[in-house]
Length: 132
Image 1: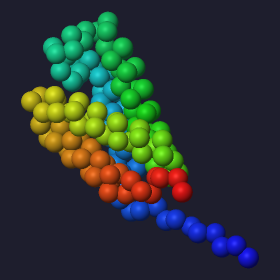
Image 2 (image 1 turned 30 degrees about the vertical axis):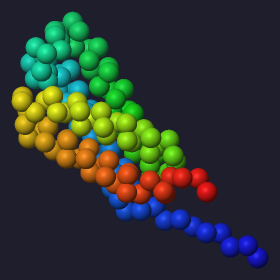
Image 3 (image 1 turned 90 degrees about the vertical axis):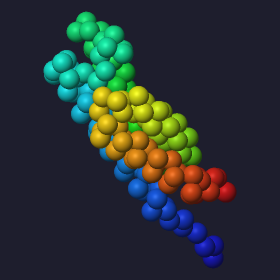
Image 4 (image 1 turned 90 degrees about the horizontal axis):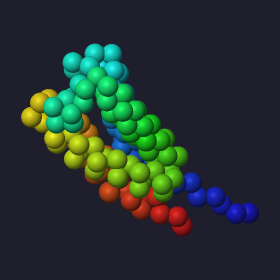
């Protein structure tokens, strides 16, 4: 009779997945705010966003939010691609929100903090994603 070993998902990996879902929700919320009211666009002077090009940035932000949601879902499934995508998007999110610190300091600090927690949770339990 063979025994099947069941590996439990570490709590920090679950936390990282939930935080990626949260970052994706933040991304969608800011995108909707930019689309519905272009005057609240994040740093329009830096990006050169005008009413005619704002939809391009919104499309990029929506795609980024979809990637964040995919990374969270893949982490919950225990897929190694979830680890890679989660690390990449968390690092990119931290870098991106660093540039928003001057305009929106509280939102930037919260988003960077969430990104750092995701990176920490994924690096501590990297062995969970290694195929045996």
